[in-house]
Every structure is written in C-alpha cells, then in structure tokens.
Image 1 (tube, rainbow, N blue to C red):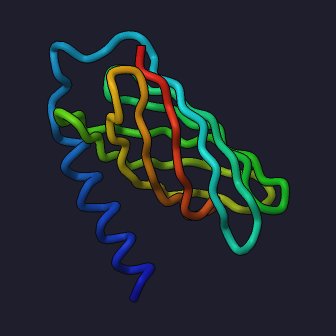
Image 2 (cartoon, rainbow, N blue to C red):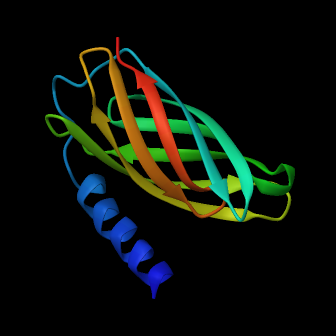
Length: 128
C-alpha cells in the first residue's frame, strides 16, 4: 500500500512536470546540492545540480552501488517538486525518484525526496 501510494504520487508529479512549459526566466546558473539519506539501515549520499528546470544527481547507495538520476523540476514561486529516473550499479537497476525543494532564503534551499535505491533523503543546496 505504501509503495503504491509513493509510486502514484511520483507518477502524478511526473506528468505535471513533464508537460509543463519551461519558463522564459529560467535560471541559467546551476544550483548545486548535497543529499544524505537512508535505505534499509545503510547511509546513502548524493550530489546534484539543476538548471533550466532539469537536473542530474550522482548517487551512492547501499552495497556500494553508484548511479545517476536525471530529474525534471516544476518551478513554482517558493517550491519546486521534481521526479526522476536513474540507473544504479551492483544489480540495483532502474531507480525512480521524486521530491520537493523549497527556497529557504535568497541563497539557500532545502529539500526532501525519495529514491527507490537510495531511500528517503534530505537536501541542502545553494542558489546563486
């Protein structure tokens, strides 16, 4: 039940972000972030960046798995939900992700998300 709800939420946000047009005032300077999370008792890490409502994240999951996620953001005034698709080594395979980033100040943002390989995670990033 819990997994089905998460997949439904990710799919719903995915369709909204996929079919939303890019803003003309989209930021050209990448916004980097770091992330720490947990999956099945293992600590997971990632680094990422976004520009023009697209992002990429390099993640380090359980059992030494490493992967890359491609993300699509929906930019709203103070909050940016996202969905993503990635691929991980060590037989982890395809990963689905979703979450939200919230502007905390003019130069910082925080976020939270879920990745099917890396689990739930918290994010801290910089806006230039």
